[in-house]
Image (cartoon, rainbow, N blue to C red; front, side):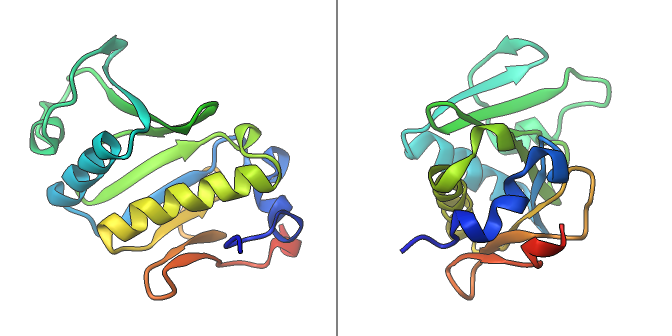
Length: 161
């Protein structure tokens, strides 16, 4: 049984309502949590690429990534949990893990299932909530992984979007 059904949540997957790149985050994190994400990405068989500026380089330890000097090239960890679906992590702060997904890549029940599976994998590894908000609408989650329920749940009414 899927965590969420397309017919119930399609408004939360509408790029015109949510913005094409909704924000996904895990609050209250540490360098160790970032390292757990890096380890998960390496161990899950997902395709990934780590970029410093626009140059692909080997993924260093999280402590090294998060202690980069001010003014250093920006870094992105690009992860494809399935072909054609990209999540872009931007390690800027130890205190929050944030990434973007592209709703145009997550349409229909298959897209909902891919996102739920990805959020669940991250949330279980970290033991923390992983929440999605409309693009730029921090603090108002619409759905996310709930560790107590051990699944992705609705956090807002999809009919109100």
